[in-house]
Length: 228
Ligand code: 5RP
Image (cartoon, rainbow, N blue to C red; front, side, top):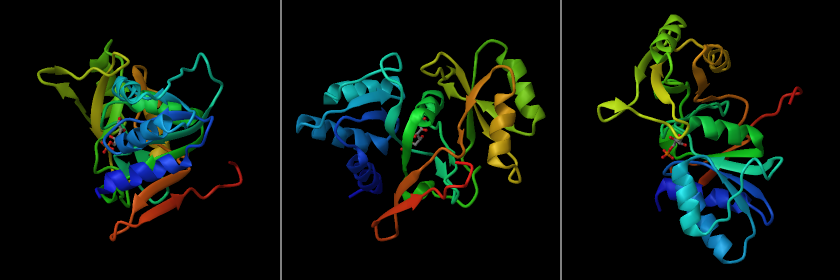
């Protein structure tokens, strides 16, 4: 079985009757959502809250009932993929362009689970370019501010025109210097006018479900600090 399918389906085991479930975006969490669709058909009662139009469509096709923030106070569990995961369980996300809704939903969840095949595990974040979502107004100026804090941004394209997120925004994919600490960079980027959100997920992940070389499931748990 494909690594993505192994970790994706494993995550579905954490979903229990009555839960509000954040549904991530991408080819790994696809397997979680498919499994949940099957469990719903077998009688599992959940409500999903999707991180993208793509996931909303998939969930509807599978018959998973959906909800929204106007109807709920919090999310029991959110499950999502990642583009990179480091040993501290910090992430780069947004390869699929859904980082803003993904972060809103991950932050709202009591438990945030990441499903990641071995290709996503890195010692240091940054080989994958960091997605930064910006509003179209003044994006040229926003780009200059991003460059001024040491990043090398490139506008994401869809053919010849900018890629448009589900929120009507643009994305800059950015190289960043190796020595930069993720939590500092996350904050610096979000201070720039025009930046809506960036794909660094720091201190949010509770559990990463991945596999070892023999494709056995491995669970990496977050070490909690006193401040948590
Ligand atoms: C989408 C994301 C995805 O979770 C990330 O790109 C991983 O996707 P995949 O599971 O297809 O590799 O952040 O915005």
